[in-house]
Amino acid sequence: MDRAAVRTEIRDILGELVADFWSDAELNRYVQEALYRFSQESRWSWLLTEGVGQLLAGDDWLTLKSGVHQHRHLNIMLQKVGDTNRPYLPKRVSPSKGLELRTMYPTPGSYPSWYYVASAVDDLGDGGFVTTVRFIPRPVSDVDVTYQYYRAPLEFLADNDVPDLPVQYHKALVHFAAGTAWLKELGAASKATEQFNLYNKVVAQAREEERSQADDDVLAWGDDQPQYGMPRPVLDVFAVPDRLGP
Image 1 (cartoon, rainbow, N blue to C red):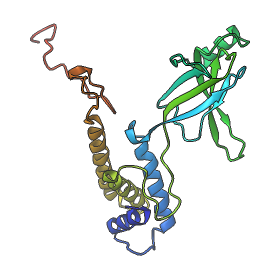
Image 2: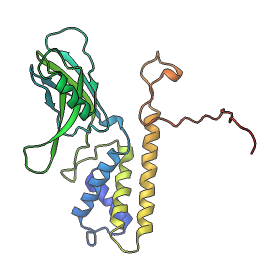
Image 3: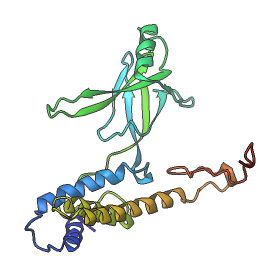
Image 4: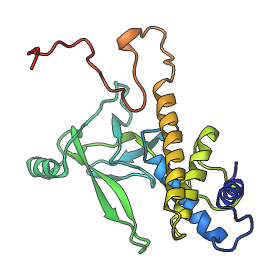
C-alpha cells in the first residue's frame, strides 16, 4: 500500500474518515516516524547495501554517502588501484585509538591498516552531519574503497510513495501511527497501547522471519549455517546446577 492507503487505514482505526481532529499532514508525520522506528528495530536484510569510493594517495579520510547508519554496522574493504592481488579488510578502532595511531604514522608510508569513523557538519547549514572515515596510515597510492552498511529508509515524498519495507510489514506503520495519533486525544491511552502492542507483534513476526531465512550455500550444514538477523537466545536446557536442593 502507498502512503495514502496507509493513512486511510489509520483513519479507519481512529473513526475519522475525513480530516478534522487529525490532519493529513499530521498523520503523514506519524507514518514517517513509524517507518524510521521500524527500520531501527533490527538489522533488516533489505536495508543492507554497499557503497564505493576512492581514497587518493596521501589522503586519510573518505566521506561516505548519506544514509549510512555507521553505529549499527560498517564493513570496509580496500584494494590498491591497479593491483590484482586480493583486497583486504582494515581493522576498525575507536576514535581515541585512531587519534593515537595517527601520531605514530604522521606521513604516508604504506597502506591503511586501521580506520575509525567520525561525523562532520555538512555544508548545507541545516544542522545535518555527514559520516567520514579516517584511515591510518595514509596510502602511498590510490586505493579503491568498498563499504557495506545499513542504509536509512527512503522518506515519503508523495501520497503514492510505497513504504521502504516488505509489503507484509506495512501494517506496522498503520498501528504505530494510529497509536501515536491516539496519544493526542485525552483519555485514549488504552487505545494507543493497543495499537503499539499490535505494532510490536508485527516487529516480532518480522524478526522471526529474518532469522528463518534459508541459506543459499548447500555446503553449509547444521551449526555451520550462517544465522541472519538477530541471534536466537541460547537456552542451556541440559545444564546441571552445581548444587542440588536448598
